[in-house]
Length: 135
Image (cartoon, rainbow, N blue to C red; front, top):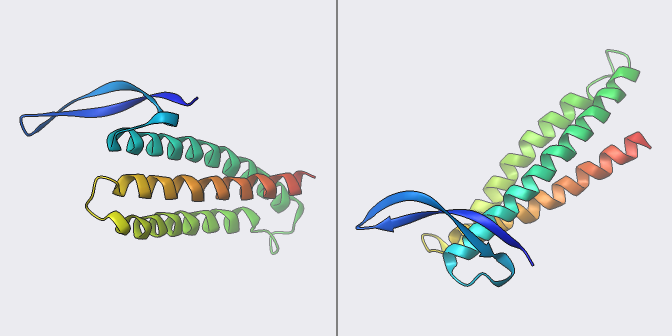
């Protein structure tokens, strides 16, 4: 069972109020706000794993660069450039996916769900890359 504490903005009298912590059972989320919060939380968890995988892959690429002549090195730079391009791709692809519910309360669910899915895939690719180099 996935139970998590999420921050929700409380609305009253037409004004956004203070953020309040709520406990949400993400396996049984019912309201759109709960589903959106759980999707955002899943993306945040995937992003944390992605950052760890990227750090590991970057370290492995630095090791490759250290074994190459200056004229052949560039593994770390290539990974950095690829990662920056991938983030742009992910964000735009997920923005496009969100247009299915554009302006609706489920749009964040689609966008965060997409970001979580693509981020999990990218993290796995980076873990695999690092493991292959570390041998």
